Length: 213
Image 1 (cartoon, helix red, strand yellow):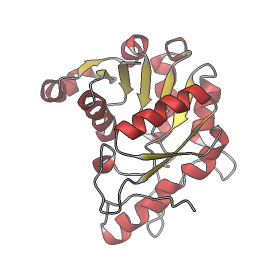
Image 2 (cartoon, rainbow, N blue to C red; image 1 turned 180 degrees about the vertical axis):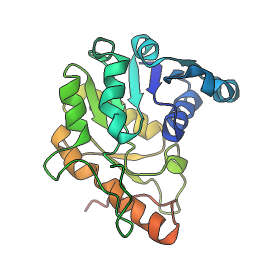
Image 3 (cartoon, rainbow, N blue to C red; image 1 turned 90 degrees about the vertical axis):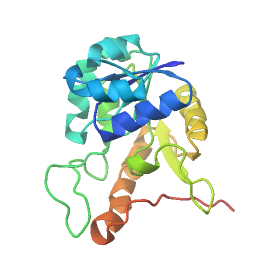
Image 4 (cartoon, rainbow, N blue to C red; image 1 turned 135 degrees about the vertical axis):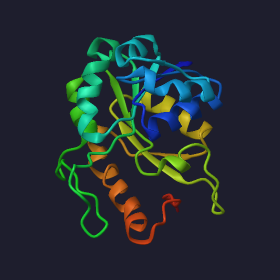
């Protein structure tokens, strides 16, 4: 899968597009207003298109939008355009209300996740949750004195997860497969934990590391 489509033109979407481009993939980024990405396209060499155009063209996709808009963005990209394709879901279900003492508020409950909602909305897409527990500045080949950080991921499709595991390795991460889409109920809250040092101490450059014995 060499043609990567990124759905979402914000900071995370642009970071992921640059990351795939850096590693030799053919990349396009989708936005509702392509004109606003003219400067980014020129500087990155990443072509710009609409959500459905990019989704139809791509072999695999990254969905990186504002959490509350994720389901709508997937539907705008086109359920048929996502059919059978790996879709890396980087989103978190962050609500519109402010954090409480540094803790982000989510619009999902403890027995639900945004990944599961996306999978239900596009049942024939192969969603994999990944890149959701670190800031955009450290998503691509991060450097830490303690070695490679851990990226937790999950999804229902074994082959899709195997491909994402290879991408994680290319991007400088140690992947940790947490199982089916249900595991997103535990992975998505890691973003809440990750953000606390940021909101409370203005520290945004850390990552998680899982030690095995």
